[in-house]
Every structure is written in C-alpha cells, then in structure tokens.
Length: 130
Image 1 (tube, rainbow, N blue to C red):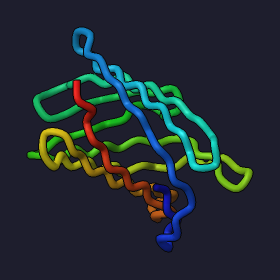
Image 2: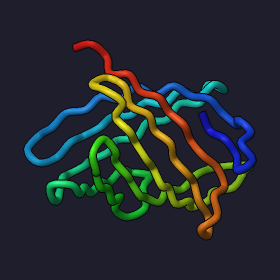
Image 3: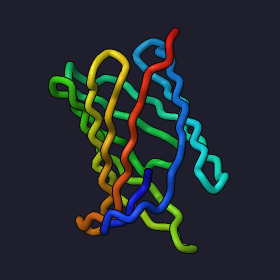
C-alpha cells in the first residue's frame, strides 16, 4: 500500500517477484498491478560487493542503489522518478526489509524529497512454495 505523509492510503497494489542468480548477479523481475488497473514492471540487477553490502540497478532507478544487511534486516537506498498528480518527482527511497522467518518478509519504505518524508510504502511478502 502507498500512503501520503499523513498516513492516508493512496493506492494498493500486488507485486509478483521472481529471481535468478547468474554468476555474481541476482536478477529480480517485479510485476506490479495497482488497484486502479495500472501495471508496472521493474527489473533489478543486484550484486554483492562485500559480506554485508550490495549494489543494484534498474531501468527507472537513478544511479546505483546501495544496500546493507544486518541480522534479519536489509536497508536499501535509491532514487527513483515517481509520477504523481500530473508531475514527475525524483524521490529518495529509504527501504527497510525484515525477514520474519523462512517465508515471510515485512518491507517499509519512506519516500523523501529534500529530506522530508512525503509518503510510505508498506509490503508483506510470502515466498511461494517451490
């Protein structure tokens, strides 16, 4: 779900993610379907640069995303252009993911402009049986 800075829900969505590792690179395919019918796709290319640090790129991400792990948490920082109210904004994302157990992950993201939080994204993931 996407919320504005006051907590009002703006949008809901469902995302299916699949991934494959080839060599040193994890490729994640994300397919989003929003409650208004809009569809989006993002393909991440992520590589480990040390035991706890990662870098990633995607077509709609500005520059290189940087991530760090600690225990069950992963913190991902990146900038992305977001369309809202007829305009496009470059927002900074502070993305926290927490592995709850082997199949559940909680994800909370703050979207910021000039250091001020303008919205949040909250996701719950369940790994599909293989």
